[in-house]
Image (cartoon, rainbow, N blue to C red; front, side, top):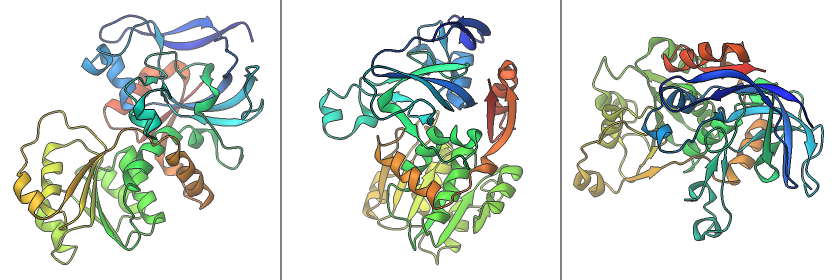
Length: 346
């Protein structure tokens, strides 16, 4: 396909430098597909790119079309594409692994050291069209799932990875932070059969939404001692699993204290400063810490497919929908925490 399209471009290094530009429609190679973007979700990573923090500065070489969470319709396929057809409804993995290194060969593509990301290393989805390799397309042709929810598959996969890293059925789980990923975590925990879901969230609006999504208990960790509060809800032993979606140092430190012996702390978010930890006490209780990076490729995608088939409802995660030319407002809503998930519509 030839022609031009509208796209949000990080035009140069530095704070801001984002413009809605007219650019050529991307051309595809023999193993690529061209997708007409129907919905694109704003991520905290896009905010980092906007303000050019160290993460963005160390990875990007503008100009680049930003955005990496989307859904759309396949409009063109390369000559060697076999598993995707024109007309398919797709979402996408955002990471492109090399498939050649030892880490990939060991089945750990999600932490491939040679990973490239759409919207970071190559043009992304805040545009009318995007080209992606066939191998990262997630085909989901059930039309009952709206485009804006299909656009959530990339972050949904992160939450699935974090929540299902250990079995939750009949177990108690503490979820730290009820932002977009934590909100999805609540839905996953309930669907996975968790016996007790405890959410720690200081924001009153997000706390109320957590309760509405099925949390059994919601605690404001700034209004009480979270260690005592969580233990009191778990017969004094603490939860079997604690999953951090906040990156808050105090929240993570508290979880290490209230976690049940032989429990697991799963860290999805990244703290912005070092955390002081009494490893001796934590280790004596036989507890473990697990870091979560992206989505297991492609195990988590098939788990997502199963959860969708089971009827998990992501509609409450979408709080705002804006036209693409209002991308700046979408970024601000995300940055200020006024949106759960903001969807841009090209």
